Amino acid sequence: MSVISESGGGLDIDRLVSVARPSDYVALLKPRVMSLVVLTALAGLLVAPSHINPIIAFASLLAIATGAGASGALNMWYDADIDAVMRRTRLRPVPAGQISKEDALAFGIVLAVLSVMTLGIVANWFAAGLLAFTIFFYAVIYTMWLKRSTPQNIVIGGAAGALPPIVGYAAAAGDISLASLALFAIIFVWTPPHFWALALVKSEEYRIAGIPMLPNVKGPDHTRGAIFAYTLLLFPLGLSPWLIGTASLVYAVLAVILGAIMLWLAVRVYYFRTGSRAENCARQLFAFSILYLLLLFAEITSEHIGTSLIPS
Amino acid sequence: MESNPHQLTLTPEQKKARRQRNVAIALVIGCVALLFYAVTIAKLGPGVLNRPL
Image (cartoon, rainbow over all chains, first blue to last red; front, side, top):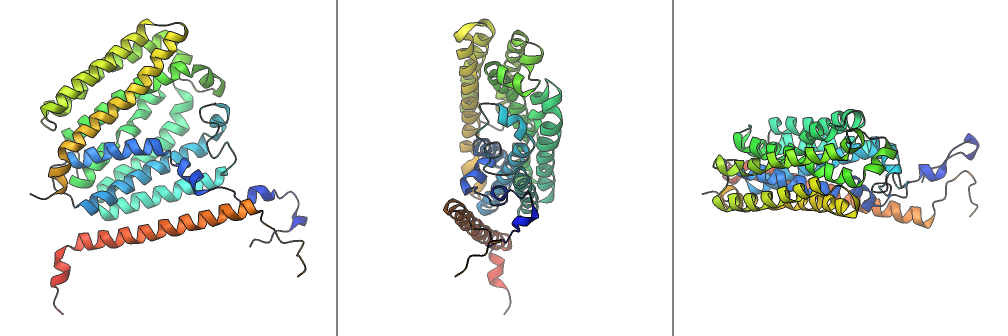
């Protein structure tokens, strides 16, 4: 047990003795983001032409997921001041006082190092380098720089979220291909309409927090046009895995249906600009965009899971 | 037993949280050890059984 001198003056004992539960550390990893990262990295890993041992595949995915968790922890360490003033994030472990900023930083750095080293050992060092770059891009380029300085923050920063399929592919094949770039492009172009739909609803919170999201800087109408433009671009990109021969016709049909629904929801966001109807349209687009990515990558994963993990 | 005025006494909540963290760390370390063992066997492949004695 720690022995602390009370005569040392000014020691805050409640701060020195953590009351954090394991669930608080799990929350620090952003588990919902992590689950999408696992799915997209798995898709990248499975579309690789080479067979990969299931145990190596599992360990690689675990390392990539841990790297994503490390990014989340580093993000929560740096953004604690923003998280504290936004209703959506104020109950996160650091602003809620469950985990100190220092502990969040240490946790993030340890996990980042462990995840990169593990991926290097179990898969290859090219994939590990890509994972390290992804963590750096999210924690430093996006969180520390872009997020607070430009309304294009999530456009450029979206690259970090789009990299997991490339890392997954590299873990299996040791290089980058057109197939992994197609998966990257889908997530990269999907990110702006996904986040801007949320930003339209939460623009007041972003304003209070001082985050220059597009609706706060360029206005909601400009944002609606940008959402529509990116969703329009997403429609053909969603078909790209089929066009380059990575996915089947079933995937193509699903991509057309999901792309059409997403485009329809983006059109609604563009036209309904006032009142609760406008807010509902933005919420619907945000919710459906998650389903869009989930279903597309689940389909592509299910197509390849048999052929990639079981040697012919 | 006399209580030491300089010794920090944990509250039941702090003790419970610390115990939960310890158990979680132990589980994670155990799982990582098992994972590395499995990865080692997978990387060595069936050839590990055919080495000369």
